[in-house]
Structure formats: C-alpha cells, structure tokens
Image 1 (cartoon, rainbow, N blue to C red):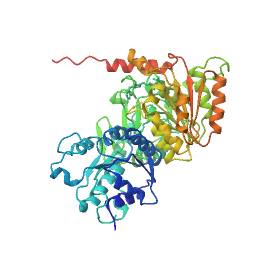
Image 2: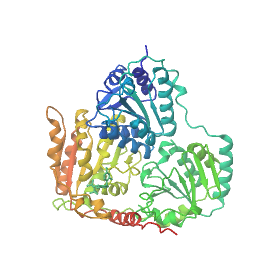
Image 3: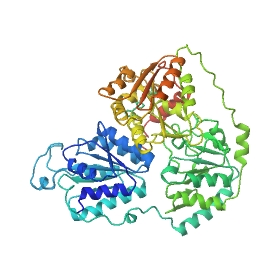
Image 4: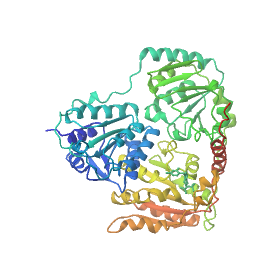
Length: 561
Ligand code: TPP
C-alpha cells in the first residue's frame, strides 16, 4: 500500500535523487521513516537547517535536482535561506517540511515550534513567495496531485518548490504514483514562435557590423551549453562569459576572450565587448554585482537577449522558446562574422608568468593563488565563496573539464562549506577545492563535520585576512573586524571518536606547498589549510569593484517633482 511518505520517496527516486538532506524534528519523523523505507534513497544528516538547505543547493548544482526535509518553523525558517538561494541561482530544490497534525487548527490548539497563534498557515504563505510552487497536503486523496504539481513546476522552471506534510499525513494511504513521464514535462518550444524569432534575429544580427557573444549563468539551468558552443562556432566571433557563467564555456577555446565584468574583467574582455556594436547575451543576468555597479551594462540598443524561455532585442519580443532550441536554430541560419575575434586577437594579452615567491618569505595572496592554481585539473570543481575568493577564483584559468561554482546572485557568506559537501555527495567523482574567507567560514563552519562523517577529501583554503575585507573595501567600520580562531585546531576537533580531518596553518610559501602535499595524500577526509595573509592583501579588482558597487549603493533618493 502506498502512503504519502512512500509516494514522495518514489517520486524523488524517479527524478534522479539518490540522497535527501535532513534535520529531524517531531513534525517530520514519520516522514523520514517512510523515506528510509526506499532502499534507493539515502539520508544525509546536516548540523542545522541553514547548512542543510545549502547542502541541498550544492547537491542540485551537481545532480540537477535535490530535496531537503526539515521540521516546522524552527527548521523551515532557517532552510528558507538556502531556498532563496536556489530560487536566485535557478536550482530545483524540493523543500519538504513537516507541520502540525491536521486536527490541531480545528481544535483551536496552541502548539510548540509555532509563533504561538492558532493559525499555522504562515509558513506555507511565506514559502509561496520564494518557490515556484507551494503545496500543503491536508487530504490524502489530494496528495498525489499536489506532490506531482510541485515537482513538475520545480523541474520545468528550475526553481525550488515547497511541500508541507502534516505529521499525521506521512503514513496516510494514497493512490500509487502514476507514470513519471507525466511529471517530467520540460518546456516545449512553440515552433511558430521559434521560426518568427529566428527570422527576425538573423536579420537583426546580420545588420550589425561587429557582434560578440556573452554567456550567462542560465545557460546551465537551460541545458544550453552545447547549443551555445554551436552558435559560437557558427558565428565565429569573440566570446566572453559573465562571472557566474565561468566554466560554462571552455576556456581553452580559440574564441574565448575572458570574463566580462566591466573594469574587473579578465583577459581584456571588456575592451572587446565594449568595442562591439551588438552583444548577443545567452542566459545572462545583469545585476549591480555582475555589472560592477551598473558600469558595464551595455545600452539596450547594443543588447540582444536570449533568455531561459524568451528572446528580446530592440523592437522585438518572443516567448515560449527554450534557449537551446533557439541557439541551435540560430546556429543553423546565421552567417559567419569574425570581426570581433580578429580585433580581439590584436588585443589578446599574453598570459602573465607568475614567478614563485621566496619559499621562506611571508606568504602573499599572489603566491597562494599561484599554488592553488597548480592544483586544478579537469576533475576539479572549484568553489569560490563571496569575498575576495570571488576575484581570486575568477582570475584562475581553468583546464578543459574543470568546473567553477559561485553563488553570485544570492551572495550568502558561508554558502560554500555546506554547498561543497552537498556537491561532493552529488558528484563523488569530482575533486573539490574550496576557497573561503575567515568571515564566511565562521557562518557555517560546523558543516566540516559532515565532510568528516562522509570521509570526503575536500580541500578547503581558508584565507585568513583577519576580517571582512570585501566589506572594508565597500564601506569600512569597526563591524568589519572579527574574532580570530585557531582554524586548524577547530577542524581537527571533528575527529573526536574517529575521522581524518586535517588542519594546517601556513605563513610561508614553503609551508603552503608542504600542506598541499599532505592534503593530497589525505584521501579519507577534508583538509583545511589556513593561509594567513595581511589584512590589506587583496586583489586590485576587489578594490575597484567595491568602489563602483559602493557608488551604486550610495545613490541619493530621487527627488519628487
Ligand atoms: N551576511 C550574509 C549571510 N551574507 C552576506 N553577504 C553578508 C552578511 C555581507 N557580507 C558580504 S561579504 C562579507 C559580509 C559580511 C564579508 C566576507 O568576509 P570574508 O569571508 O572574511 O572574506 P574577505 O572579504 O575577507 O575575502
């Protein structure tokens, strides 16, 4: 007999989930038992619900879909943070929350883990604002329809969904799951809309002299990386990526011209993008951060935008078109125009040769980056946390196959630690390297414990510059100073009964090289290498970017007329 709990378990397995991330609580315990009955589903236990939601977010980055199970209010409110991230970052994460017994509201009871009122709908109402579909399972006969609806939307829109399961509902009987194909309904391109869009686009693009291409982060959720590559090769022009799209286009490709990020671009991408008279943006998201405080947003007349499911350029708008279908169709029809690539090849900077620093000199950020860079292979996924780690990571050239993860839309410090362990569960074959600042690490540090528990050989570079340096560059004050920790000793505390966490603190290039060697041989657990650098030793790019973002933040209110 199918219960609501086993129904959910079957659906999770059918859509490709092997692990669900949980923190138990009395409102979800029966549900957790029901999920455990499915042998194809393995539970992963996190230390708190904030971390749990980020671990699921990271798992979705690796696996394409994830689920997180929490208890009512005290758990779900913390998990909302990672769900906000999943929404912003276009990651399908299913948030499942236990909730009060269905009889309690009618019985006019006050309950624990609530805000102390007689209505318990507030969590569902909050969830509606940060998910693409939110459902409450109050009647067993409705449950299959509601569960399928939430999951279908989540998969199609690549956004999180919410399923609320009252504590007395998990073991209630319901109809068995129907064919999964009815839930897997990817966006269908309307052929008429596609034809009209491609005809108008070809005419528009061929009317410009020197187009360029720009890849954005939504290429990934749209599954359009290959079709983008086809368009790149058909058009033959210069190609840049937005910072959050790093690694979605191969960096060894002859048409690649770097990360376009205004004045903090790499490889002079800004020179060629701003020289061009049309930027064809595929899956791009322009925010104050990705445009360096709005300084690098091309004028609308120079922008052609192919989005997740729509196309817009001056005087035109089309929707119901999947991005990959559009890029493929355009690649079939567009004429080659390599003017921007020819120009870029004149500007292309020769890669700088970074000399090794003296092994005994106090370590600098530059030397640290040089050594981390050498570790990156085609099997590496590099996580770059909010802070100067963004800039350190963005500047590293990646070999073919290497992947880069960044959370630039949501920008929650501390994301990288739980997200990278979630990612490691979803992609056990990848070698994970995480660069994180001291301030960020302090937010979610206890999730290193899960790396120890699961024996994941993640290498964490903890860049200790003794404070919130990115904030120092945007707007300084005493609040940017934090308490220093003994980070190496901290992670080794997780070895209490067993475990292989290793921690090192390094002050010179030689010490770093030695710690990296030891990290590589620690295959049964995480290694944290704390690199102590000077408080002001940050990238020039952080300083410039911080300046422009601060200017954008500081614009005075519009005067009323
Ligand atoms: N709270 C959350 C949850 N997220 C944020 N992004 C912030 C506050 C604001 N914030 C952005 S970066 C930052 C803070 C507090 C400091 C990061 O410091 P650290 O991790 O040490 O990196 P560094 O800037 O030193 O490289």
